[in-house]
Image: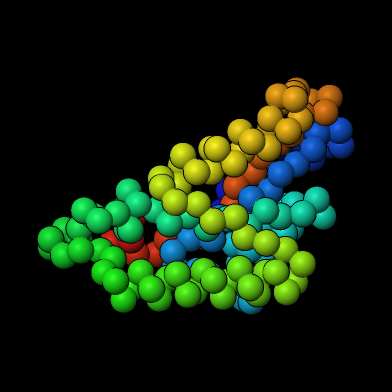
Length: 145
Protein backbone atom coordinates (compact mmCIF):
# COMPACT_ATOMS: atom_id res chain seq x y z
CA UNK A 1 0.00 0.00 0.00
CA UNK A 2 1.26 3.46 -0.82
CA UNK A 3 2.17 5.66 2.10
CA UNK A 4 0.09 8.74 2.73
CA UNK A 5 1.66 12.16 2.47
CA UNK A 6 1.17 13.50 5.99
CA UNK A 7 3.68 16.29 5.73
CA UNK A 8 2.72 19.92 5.22
CA UNK A 9 3.58 20.69 1.60
CA UNK A 10 3.93 24.40 2.38
CA UNK A 11 6.84 23.74 4.72
CA UNK A 12 9.92 24.32 2.58
CA UNK A 13 12.41 24.29 5.46
CA UNK A 14 12.01 20.66 6.44
CA UNK A 15 14.38 18.27 4.71
CA UNK A 16 12.97 15.03 3.36
CA UNK A 17 14.28 11.51 3.14
CA UNK A 18 12.10 9.41 0.89
CA UNK A 19 12.83 5.69 1.11
CA UNK A 20 11.58 3.27 -1.50
CA UNK A 21 11.32 -0.16 0.10
CA UNK A 22 11.58 -2.78 -2.63
CA UNK A 23 9.59 -5.72 -1.33
CA UNK A 24 9.73 -9.38 -2.23
CA UNK A 25 7.22 -9.28 -5.06
CA UNK A 26 8.30 -6.19 -7.00
CA UNK A 27 12.00 -5.70 -7.73
CA UNK A 28 11.52 -3.99 -11.08
CA UNK A 29 12.31 -0.40 -12.01
CA UNK A 30 10.13 -0.07 -15.09
CA UNK A 31 6.35 0.02 -14.78
CA UNK A 32 6.52 0.09 -10.97
CA UNK A 33 3.63 2.19 -9.57
CA UNK A 34 5.05 2.35 -6.04
CA UNK A 35 8.45 3.50 -7.29
CA UNK A 36 6.76 6.12 -9.48
CA UNK A 37 4.85 7.36 -6.42
CA UNK A 38 8.09 7.44 -4.41
CA UNK A 39 9.78 9.63 -7.02
CA UNK A 40 6.78 11.97 -7.12
CA UNK A 41 6.74 12.29 -3.32
CA UNK A 42 10.48 12.92 -3.09
CA UNK A 43 10.06 16.32 -4.77
CA UNK A 44 13.43 15.92 -6.47
CA UNK A 45 15.20 15.44 -3.13
CA UNK A 46 16.29 11.98 -4.17
CA UNK A 47 15.17 8.52 -3.20
CA UNK A 48 16.95 5.98 -1.02
CA UNK A 49 16.24 2.49 -2.42
CA UNK A 50 16.14 -0.30 0.20
CA UNK A 51 15.62 -4.07 0.12
CA UNK A 52 15.30 -6.18 3.26
CA UNK A 53 15.82 -9.93 3.46
CA UNK A 54 12.98 -10.49 5.92
CA UNK A 55 14.14 -13.23 8.30
CA UNK A 56 10.95 -13.02 10.35
CA UNK A 57 8.50 -13.95 7.58
CA UNK A 58 10.35 -15.51 4.66
CA UNK A 59 14.10 -16.05 4.85
CA UNK A 60 14.52 -17.35 8.41
CA UNK A 61 15.65 -20.96 8.68
CA UNK A 62 12.60 -21.85 10.79
CA UNK A 63 9.98 -19.90 8.82
CA UNK A 64 7.33 -22.23 7.43
CA UNK A 65 4.05 -21.84 5.56
CA UNK A 66 0.70 -22.78 7.14
CA UNK A 67 1.13 -26.20 5.51
CA UNK A 68 4.46 -26.71 7.28
CA UNK A 69 6.70 -26.26 4.24
CA UNK A 70 9.83 -24.16 4.43
CA UNK A 71 9.06 -20.76 2.84
CA UNK A 72 12.48 -20.26 1.32
CA UNK A 73 14.64 -23.15 0.22
CA UNK A 74 18.13 -22.88 -1.27
CA UNK A 75 16.96 -22.42 -4.88
CA UNK A 76 14.52 -19.65 -4.03
CA UNK A 77 17.11 -17.95 -1.84
CA UNK A 78 19.64 -18.04 -4.71
CA UNK A 79 17.04 -16.65 -7.13
CA UNK A 80 16.23 -13.73 -4.83
CA UNK A 81 19.93 -13.03 -4.17
CA UNK A 82 20.52 -12.85 -7.93
CA UNK A 83 17.44 -10.63 -8.45
CA UNK A 84 18.60 -8.21 -5.72
CA UNK A 85 22.11 -8.20 -7.20
CA UNK A 86 20.64 -7.36 -10.63
CA UNK A 87 18.51 -4.59 -9.10
CA UNK A 88 21.59 -3.15 -7.37
CA UNK A 89 23.60 -3.22 -10.62
CA UNK A 90 20.77 -1.58 -12.58
CA UNK A 91 20.39 1.17 -9.98
CA UNK A 92 24.18 1.68 -9.96
CA UNK A 93 24.14 2.17 -13.75
CA UNK A 94 21.53 4.90 -13.20
CA UNK A 95 23.64 6.67 -10.60
CA UNK A 96 22.01 5.25 -7.50
CA UNK A 97 22.63 2.46 -5.06
CA UNK A 98 20.66 -0.04 -3.04
CA UNK A 99 20.77 -0.41 0.72
CA UNK A 100 20.33 -4.09 1.58
CA UNK A 101 19.37 -5.14 5.09
CA UNK A 102 18.77 -8.45 6.81
CA UNK A 103 16.25 -8.95 9.61
CA UNK A 104 12.84 -7.57 10.46
CA UNK A 105 11.88 -4.87 7.92
CA UNK A 106 10.45 -2.78 10.75
CA UNK A 107 13.80 -2.85 12.57
CA UNK A 108 15.97 -2.33 9.48
CA UNK A 109 13.89 0.60 8.20
CA UNK A 110 13.75 2.15 11.68
CA UNK A 111 17.58 1.99 11.91
CA UNK A 112 17.92 3.67 8.51
CA UNK A 113 15.47 6.43 9.50
CA UNK A 114 17.18 6.91 12.87
CA UNK A 115 20.58 7.15 11.19
CA UNK A 116 19.23 9.77 8.77
CA UNK A 117 17.77 11.82 11.58
CA UNK A 118 21.02 11.41 13.52
CA UNK A 119 23.01 12.96 10.67
CA UNK A 120 21.01 16.12 11.27
CA UNK A 121 21.99 16.29 14.92
CA UNK A 122 18.68 14.78 15.95
CA UNK A 123 16.89 17.98 14.94
CA UNK A 124 13.40 16.95 13.85
CA UNK A 125 11.47 20.16 14.35
CA UNK A 126 9.96 22.16 11.50
CA UNK A 127 12.82 24.64 11.21
CA UNK A 128 15.34 22.29 9.67
CA UNK A 129 14.48 18.74 10.71
CA UNK A 130 14.19 15.68 8.52
CA UNK A 131 10.88 14.16 7.51
CA UNK A 132 11.32 10.45 6.69
CA UNK A 133 8.81 8.86 4.36
CA UNK A 134 8.78 5.17 3.38
CA UNK A 135 6.89 4.01 0.31
CA UNK A 136 6.40 0.42 -0.82
CA UNK A 137 4.21 -1.73 -3.00
CA UNK A 138 1.44 -3.60 -1.22
CA UNK A 139 2.09 -7.34 -1.07
CA UNK A 140 -0.51 -9.18 -3.11
CA UNK A 141 -0.01 -12.65 -1.71
CA UNK A 142 -0.87 -13.20 1.96
CA UNK A 143 1.46 -16.20 1.97
CA UNK A 144 4.40 -13.80 1.68
CA UNK A 145 3.43 -11.84 4.79
